[in-house]
Amino acid sequence: GGMAAAHGVIGQSHFLLDNPQHMVPSLKEIGARFFVTGFLRRYISTGLITLLEEGGTMFTFEGTTKRCPLTVTLRIHSPEFYWKVMTQADLGLADAYINGDFSCVDKNKGLLNLFQILIANRDSDITMSKLSKRRGWWTPMLSTAGIASAKYFFKHILRQNTLTQARRNISQHYDLSNELFSLFLDETMTYSCAVFEMAGEDLKAAQMRKISLLIKKARIEKTHEVLEIGCGWGSLAIEVVRQTGCKYTGITLSKEQLKYAKSRVKEAGLQDSIKFILCDYRQLPSAYKYDRIISCEMIEAVGHEYMEEFFSCCESVLAKDGLLVLQFTSIPDERYEEYRQSSDFIKEYIFPGCCVPSLSRITSAMASASRLSVEHVDNIGIHFYQTLRCWRKNFMEKQRKILALGFNEKFIRTWEYYFDYCAAGFKSHTLGNYQIVFSRPGNEAAFTDLYASSPTSN
Image 1 (cartoon, rainbow, N blue to C red):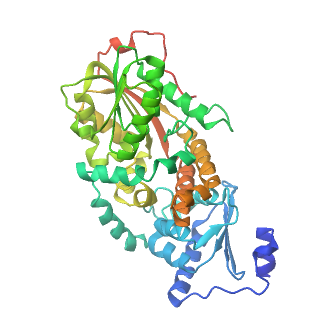
Image 2 (tube, one colour):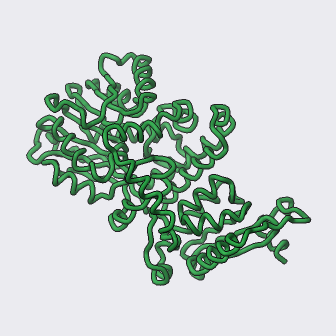
Image 3 (cartoon, helix red, strand yellow):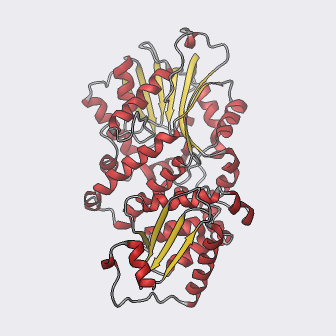
C-alpha cells in the first residue's frame, strides 16, 4: 500500500526501487522520527507535507483548513534528518538539506513551498493556540531548539561587529569570488532588491528601474557630492554619475568588491567623478560633508548594537541641506527581539553577524542619535520575491560553472536554501524591503519643487 501510495505521490514509479532498502535508523533516530512526526501532526493545520523515506515508508501531514493550498513532498535520504530537526529545529532543517539528508521531489518550487507552508502554519491561529510562540522567523519550530541554540548564540555573540570583526564578517560573504556573483546577478552586478513592472521582466531592466528610483528619491543634482556606504560592485555609483554628472565617493569593506568596482569605473571612463575607498563608515572624517548619502542594503550588516552609531556617523558627514536615502530588508517589529537573540540560518551560513532590523529599530536609532526625520517611506519587499527567484534560476542553471570554480554540491545547496528561505519570507510579507528618505527638519532647499511628489515603486 505504501509503495502504491508513494508512486501516486511522485507520479514516476522509477524513483523507487522494486526491492527497496529500508532506512535503518538507530534507536535515537527512531525516537527523533517519533518526535518530529508527532510535532508535524500537531503543527500542520494548513497545506500538505509528505515525507517519503527510502524504501517507501510514507508520512502525510495535511491541514484541515484551506488557507494554504500548497503541497510538498520531501524525500528523506537519511534518518539523520529527524535527529537534526529534533535537536536544532530550523537550523537542523537547513543542515539536513545542505548535507543531502533530504531533497524535494519538485526541484523548482519544492523548497519554496515547504517554507511557505511552514510560514502559513506559524501564522495560523490554530497552531498558535496549540504551541506557544518559539524562536525563528519563519517557524516557531520545536521546543527543544534550546539545546542547540545556546551553541549558535555564543557563536553569534562572538561576531559582534567591532571594526576588525565587521571587516571579517563582510569579507566572508563578499570575497567569495566576484566570478561566483557574476554567475547569478544581472550584468550590472546589483546585489539588492530590484523593482519589477511585470512578471517575467528582465532582471537588468528591473535593477535599472530600482537605481533610477533611488536617484529620484535622493534628488541628486550635478553640483552634489554623493557618498555611498557599502558601494558593492559599483553599479549604483556608475549609474548615478551617468544620470546626474555628480561627484561620487563609495566605501566598502570588501577588497574583492573594491578591485572590481575600480576597474569598472575605469572601463566606463568615470574615474574623475568616482572614487572608491576601503573604509568603515565609522572612520569617515567628519570635517568632510556630503550633500547626499545613499546606503543600499548595507545596514543589515551594521548589527543591533551599532544602529545608533550608524545614524550619528551619517549625520556627522551630511551637509546642512543634505538627504540620506536607505534601502534595507526588514523584519516585523513583533518578531524583532526574538529574532535578534536567536541565530537563524542566514546569520549562521550566509551573513555572519548580520541583523535584519525592524522599522522601529531604524526610527528609534534615528531619533536617539541624530536630528534626522523621515520624509518618505516605500516598501518594495514583494519585488524581492521575484528578484530572488531570478537569482536562484540563474544560480541553478550555472551549477557546472560554480563547481568548476571550486565550490562543492553542499555550497550549491546552501545557496539554493538561502534563495528560497528569503523568497518565502518576502512572498508571505514576513520580510519587507524599505526605501526611506531622511532629512533634517527645516530642509527647504532639498524640496524646492513642491509639486514633484516623491516617486514610489507601485
